[in-house]
Length: 256
Image 1 (cartoon, one colour):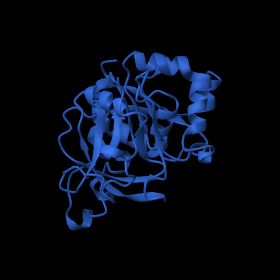
Image 2: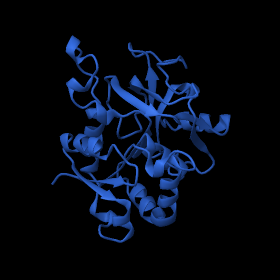
Image 3: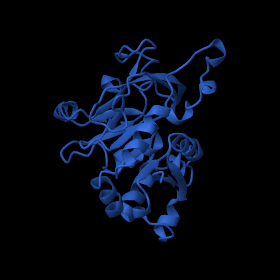
């Protein structure tokens, strides 16, 4: 049986169908559910082997991107989400979903390390294609992901910051920096714009929890799962699909 993926939908979510298609192509069984369906127990968390918090503008980004969705997760589903994570089930938060996971305290998942996703250094919304490289062997979503990934970003609050230098050291020691922004050749962006679209120190595009089963990232790998989605596909560009990321997640979910 294919692993079932709960795709969490809230008012303003708009990438749920995109990521559902990616999960389906990767061999999973996606199920988009509004947050109210969980609140009223029409479905239960233990029916699923994966959790996806997709992108969009949940609750119109009121009070900050992902903040109200994070409050929902904390107020109504804290125990369920904690049990899901502690069971080792794969969880992914993309863009707005990443923001929600960080603001709910699920990422980076270290008690003494506080992080946030704040306004882009450019001072405006960034909508462009970027190149990513996997840098963590701890993260189940990025293991053996040797090829680069090209995919779009679309965010105004994507700069990942940690409260203290010691926090950065801890993330690096735990191998929690899962994805970084690079040049088209795969070299670290070195903070250079627009390769690093938001000014995240260390070119951080995605981080995982210490156990490696929870991944959050700002770019949208679900929007490059077919060759023809790339802006240069008519020029013969091949590869660098985001699909492999979801294949890793589904493969790991089969063991849960």
